[in-house]
Image (spheres, rainbow, N blue to C red):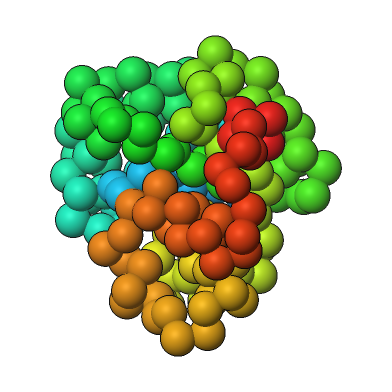
Length: 199
């Protein structure tokens, strides 16, 4: 009958709408709008969604790829994810002997970048002398990825290249963040007195 056919069509349409909303909600959740680059020598980037949750983990060198695969960070709040990453057993060999951890954030806006930087800098793991935290430049991301570097390491590369124009992205790929920072300090004539945890 006509009314029952109309009811079936209405039910089918309602189900289709719910599926679309569910799919749209899922896509909304899994789409990164901000990013965090964590560099020691493993270099990884964490994609952060609108709800401050990690939705992607990408390695930018062999050690970074291995590290990304060995520590489960997805769906954690970004500050908890950094805590889990930096305190993980897999990370400890890189942090030994004064290994410098560079954390670079790029938020969806400059205000969000600063909010993320401040929040990370207030966490216990960021108070170490061997952890630096700063905001990155969204324009550098594409160039960094084209050079095969995370945007955090690319930022350090640009700083070093300004002092040593002969240094290449390839040279920097195999260097640790401590080696890059020490080279910058050496070339700029500054002693290593920076309190990294202050951002």
